[in-house]
Image 1: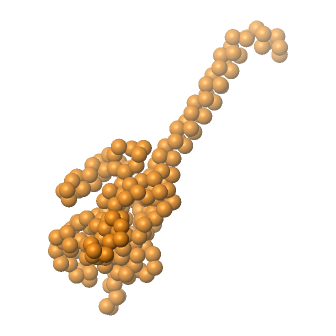
Image 2: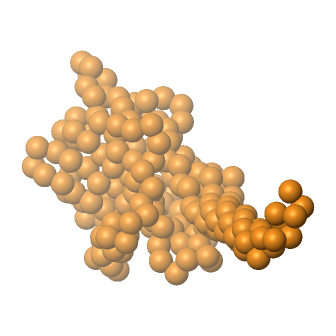
Image 3: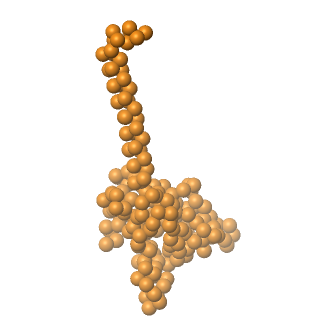
Length: 203
């Protein structure tokens, strides 16, 4: 065997070099995937408490990096079509009652693992009306969608997540039913451009 190795030393060295290169490629691939995972944002939108219009809506940052919430948008669908409005400003709190500027808006930094309560469904509808939203009775809403747009230090483009709920009516009681298990993360360039365009309309 040693005779064969000595006779084919060039082939053995080439094979060892190829194996070493393959190991480094696999290691580099794992390293790149780990870095992408660390930089990837994950925004969670979920309901707390009840499932009616008093349900508290929570936004959580499950990514490893802090993010800055730029905008929160509410979209509702009725028989008359689709309506959208910004609901980032806390219009339900009078300005003279703000103890800090942070109480006036939901825009701001959100650390990794932190969450912020953005209000109830009723609060969001009231804020939308303050932004010129037409008067819409909750019973007329078929679906509603919450979109959270943010930015991180690792990416110059916005990141966003959205979650849609169906409005159910049981007699006089209205309830919300999520249409997916978790918030849909907006990662494609086309979808992010659409959200950026929607945000510019509100400037």
